[in-house]
Image (cartoon, one colour):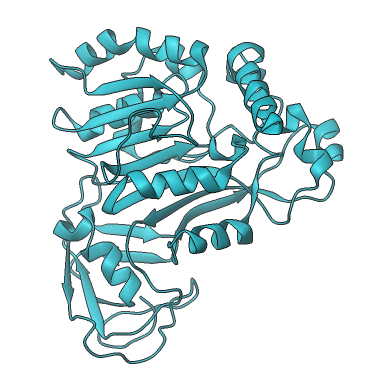
Length: 347
């Protein structure tokens, strides 16, 4: 308990007092270099400068087709991603931003009137709450109440990641989605590095070993998550690089659905066709880093992929032919495989 409280206190101090802006970061771990979609850039151009100046993130955890959704942003900080999602979900959607740092929330809340006016919304569709990502019930988030959970380089800071993910899947609706960016490691991090306050505040010391992350989701009932992007982090700080030793760190964006998926890809002879109707993606849709659906082109898919595009909010944008009444064995669904109907191969 003491370790948990001291870790949280250290994070609050780092992000509430020590860091006054992104220029104060000591590494590049919490600096996103992803190329944002045009629609996102257009919205960010409407967000107040103070919000953007105090943004710390390693990716862009905002998926497509979010209109009308109820969204939860874990560790929202000053609200950059909350306001981005606010515009994208529209007046019929709603975004909850949760953070434990009072200084960050003060900035986020202060800009609600100006941002709603700028977006043309008569009624605010955002709510900033003080709380802990390990205790979403304490923040008033009920079971099966959220369509989409996002987070941007925050879960690594938590001293109890299993509880974080358990809470996420509790609050997600069936078919709901977790879509987040964070720092991962290629090996388990030694305890002495985990206790370093600067490496922890810089989102490195608390990084999850990628395989432990897979096992954690599996144990919580999520047998298949998908990687959207991955880049190796170059710290750009010689002293901290020396402290971290040979540990390889990665910024990754992943998605996972609250679905009863199988632990390997299975072949049921299903075919999925993207209809080209996702806003901003008229010609193709990327489900992950190796599933690119071209508009109108049928593609053979495994059962898991069929459910991801057919039994979620994406279902209205896809036509999935076939069911699971007949099984044809395992499906080659690796990043290097290519499949399309009727030739066969990977989903």
